[in-house]
Length: 448
Image 1 (cartoon, rainbow, N blue to C red):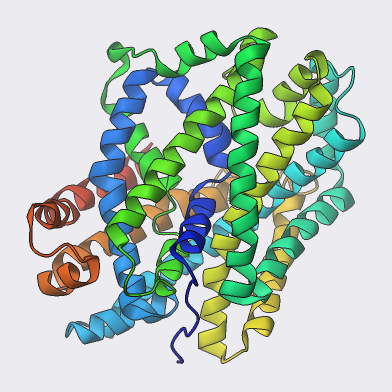
Image 2 (spheres, rainbow, N blue to C red):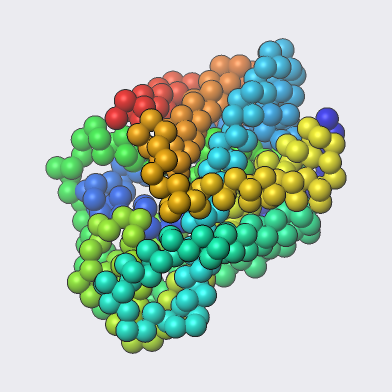
């Protein structure tokens, strides 16, 4: 296998790509919703603790492996293992990460298609005069329209594939330099709009008022899970992006910036979504339907709602595409290495494989809705397989590998921390805190 030759041309490009991968649709609605339902400010506090104790250590480990190995996740894991005198079979952990990214992408790209479709609807209609019943009917029609879902899913994949097709600097870095500042700008504009439009105080209270009576085992596990999944660990993207990171760049500083930005985006998203929900008396606990069934009703009622709807779904579209890039890039790089394909051909093959399998995901919302695997529909099965099995097991094994099978000197050299207190805290966490915590997520996930 040939080593990955391309590198980020700047730290800014790497950070924008990494933050773009971490910030996805889950951040925009799931984090605020979970915060409100799990004690508000108390959940935020526990989440931040979990991010620092679990998310940051394992993300540093992933970037360490990626930069040290300079290949796709399987290749990087193998290179580092062999260099440390360990078994080359550790490459299978990297393979598990790539498989997780692929499975997640098959389902995720369909939801991204819905977002693009709703952006089109926002531009053409602005959801004028849409009430609760009409919003539900529109979403039901989307789910039943197979040709429509195929078209918008393929459009999202083509946009993603075009970015990957042109490589690290010419494609990914060039795209995120524009897309991520756009995302941050739209978030700020919408948050400021909601501050003056009403409902902002209730939203802030919903998100940040601490209810410590809700701090229990289930809430802590929910916070651990959110911390683990929201920053994209064990999904191959971060390890792949780490393989393109020049030696002179600080992994530790980069990780802190990525995690802080990811958390701020999630909290800002809550201040974008919930003011409108509270002002117009809608249900803040409407879960996945919040974006597609609840918010269009608010857009229909608010002054300037047409433009707010366009800005909001443009924001979501950017978040969806940047996350898809981080999910498909590892697959393309693995094909490039494993099959000896040039970058262009590998990108087309990766996108084509996801596109074909996404048809089954689309059909599971309608024609195949009755098809069950162990009591779950196809999308729920894929979601369970990736989120409850592949990600926690992959994350656990990455933490064990970095903590116990990579020498302390190698880790200290790659992280650039010397052997001081900060390195000592990270090394302790990756050995003794992260593996048990991730193992708990796995056990709870498969036994719930």
